[in-house]
Image 1 (cartoon, helix red, strand yellow):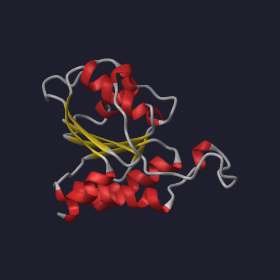
Image 2 (tube, helix red, strand yellow):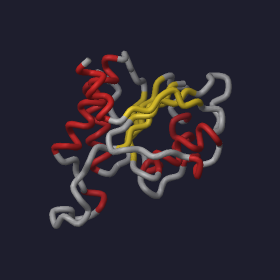
Image 3 (cartoon, one colour):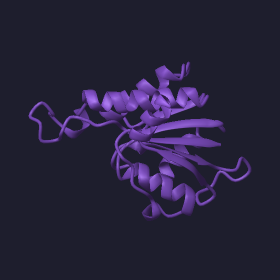
Image 4 (cartoon, helix red, strand yellow):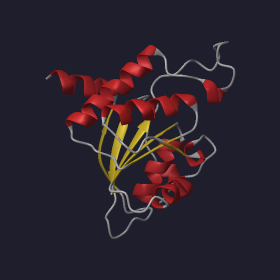
Length: 169
């Protein structure tokens, strides 16, 4: 199984008076550009997810929708409370597995949850995660015969700035 973990793009600052709540913060233009760049790179890499999961918060949902549209995902975006800020890494993996055994999964979420999920997949330790810039994507591979925490391998992690350079070379 290939899991592509993406942190939402840059969003409206939480101190902005237009942000009526954290859940309602939306992507700003820079964030949309970050996510569009990553979506373009994923499309060029031939990523074809059979499951796209997103936090229900607006900025993550917008991120997942941009990615899904760029990748031609026919199944749409599934919202999961496990990807919201109070979700758990074990809950995210359970949510993925509740959809059968998808081969390619894209998830869109928030810090520190995306980092904790990565640490959980690779080290079976949410505290062993890694930093994610807004809009960054990490690809983690889990062996098909052991879809368990601690069995994942980080194949790559790309922030939007590197994706931009890769797309212009």
